[in-house]
Amino acid sequence: MNWRQCVLNFVKRIPTGQITTYQKLAQASGKPRAYRAVGNILKHNPCPYNQSQGKKIPCHRVIRSDGFIGGYNQGQQLKIKLLKSEGLTVEGRKILNWRQQLYNFKS
DNA sequence: AGTAAGGCGGGCA
DNA sequence: GTGCCCGCCTTAC
Image (cartoon, rainbow, N blue to C red; front, side, top):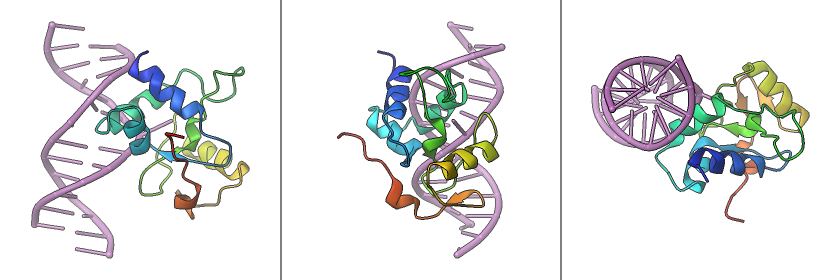
């Protein structure tokens, strides 16, 4: 499996209402230093989150390691909207209590 | 404390 | 096959 597919696969596993960071994704995929590439992949995201079962990639649940939401290929506002609709509290461009919502891989 | 710049890995033109 | 771009992170001033 390509590393790209591997990363996307990890993103798929994020449950609703939880989030992860680009760095954690990079670590989980076995390339801790490739966090930039993770962003690059999600930017050229094949499926934005609305598509059929199995292919949905909730890329809006991936944020920066400092709690800011980072960017989004469909606009930051939409990303915030999606996060709020999943029960997260977003203030401006930052998620409040984001550390408590972090999803740990390896499980 | 906040801000600036450098570095790094992979996808895409 | 090269070069450039990036939804970033870390270190240094």
